[in-house]
Image 1 (cartoon, rainbow, N blue to C red):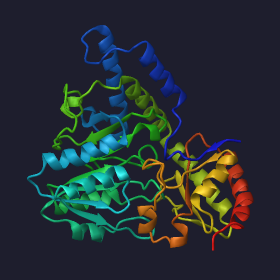
Image 2 (cartoon, helix red, strand yellow):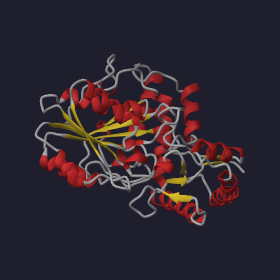
Image 3 (cartoon, rainbow, N blue to C red):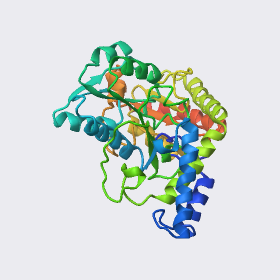
Image 4 (tube, helix red, strand yellow):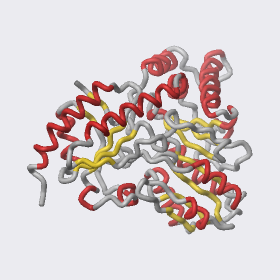
Amino acid sequence: MECYFDNSATTRCSDKAAEKMMQVLCTDYGNPSSLHGKGMTAENYVKESREIIAKSLKCETKEIIFTSGGSEGNNLAIFGSVRANKRVGKHIITTAVEHAAVYMPFKELERQGYDVTFLPTDEKGVISLNDLENALTDDTVLVAMMHVNNEIGSVMPVAEAGKLIHEKCPEALFFVDAIQSYGKVPLIPKKMGIDLLSVSGHKIHGPKGSGFLYKRDKVKLDPIIFGGGQENGYRSGTENVPAIAGLGVAVQEMFSDFDGHREHLFELKRHLAEKLSDIDAVSINSGLDENSAPQILSVSVDGVRAEVLLHALEDKGIYVSAGSACSSNRPAISRTLKSIGLKDSLLESTVRFSFSIYNTIEQVDYASDVMHELIPVLLRYRRF
């Protein structure tokens, strides 16, 4: 049995999304900026996807900017907002557990002279609102925060943070990395005080190379890619129409039964956590209640290196991740696991199971049986 449990790294493209992409690639392949009929057909694909996405966020279509994915969306939100609003100040705030696509832009801005505050988290991977309030100053121009942590699935208090930021620093912007939450956790930007929000298509069964940035109307944002002025001047370059069309289909599918999909993901996560709980060496780092993401389960096995367990599981047809697959293929000590205070012996002994709507209870049972079989064997070779 093959069990793909690395869906926070990437998901398989849905059949309907792939079919739509082939239609656009091979038949309706016009440039949406062209004035002839084929161009207008392409433009309609872009328009349709924009409408689908706007409906999912209860926002206006003009507030959606198509990007090549999460990293570009994050960089556009961060660099574009601080450049456009530099008169506000040079203090920016983020958390200690951000994905590299947010953390590294903040480090670059720090190198350029910005004053950066990295908020710590508690043992659940959640920031303190008191820490956030104390960090806000008259000079704060941007606060960036992931909605769902990509390694352990903790959910940040985004709505509360948005309210606090706008009450204390009305000119500061609030950017949320929603790459692991969109389609899985309730998310309405305007109700949550979110000014900018990034999404990646390949996390929700859309194609790689697709994504979008929500930008609240009237928010000032400088482009980071210049050229023909596509996407209302915020993201120049010929639109990737096949990817955008596929993304629209994937969004429609994810939101066609949002509650049902979310319930299914929680069932898989909790079932595996329960099955693994009777293995002495195993500890669960993810929350299992409604305040956690439904699709991510972080598991530590004391005495077994993550890479060893990962490849042992792979030999049995089970695919998991050791940390964030998006950072690089070179494992490093996780900032998230450090931030939650995980003991040193577990920092290199943690793997992530991440589920999709296509996974089944039977697959989870198989993975549990394999873990029960493998771990006692692998522990015999533990390093003392």
